[in-house]
Image (cartoon, rainbow, N blue to C red; front, top):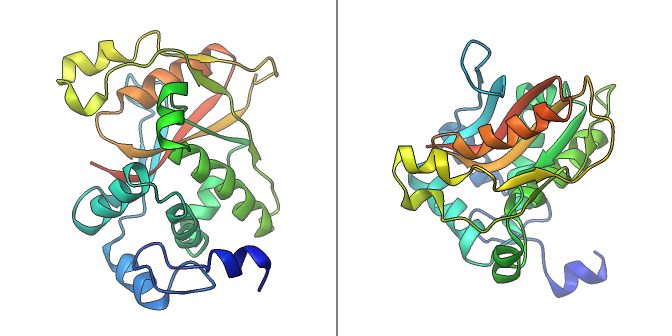
Length: 219
């Protein structure tokens, strides 16, 4: 056990019990029984992204866990989500098809309030986890987008308002060549898809070939 583990003992993010793997056996089984682990195609729609990969429906216990992760200063919960992903061969094999994994950004104001971007923690550590599995292909982590406007929370708005609320909010900060690349965009929850669709539109404008969305849950 290293010094950090002594100061901050590893726990299962779902039940809080001490567990060196960050995901205890009971929670692993319970959440596996609740999981959806779906890959939904959007290729025949007007969306800028091609597919959506998600682990759970956004309700019950999962909803409570994500709220704690996002709003109650429990960033360590990402470790348990990543461990859950590691144990799902179908999801790992789908993720590794992408060249780059990147998070949906939050504003500087929100980052200062929260202290972390929950989607960024997921993105960077999913990349590390996938690359350790040696699936014959590596996925690169990059912070590609920035949020330049602190808009209203989408959850407070109507469907029509949500579409307008994300316009002009994000931009690409990278000067790298993304032409022909396959990018996986990571967020925590998928509700209407307006946020990830706007981010996908910007990614397409810098030459990205195809885009997948990864979220923990779908509402």
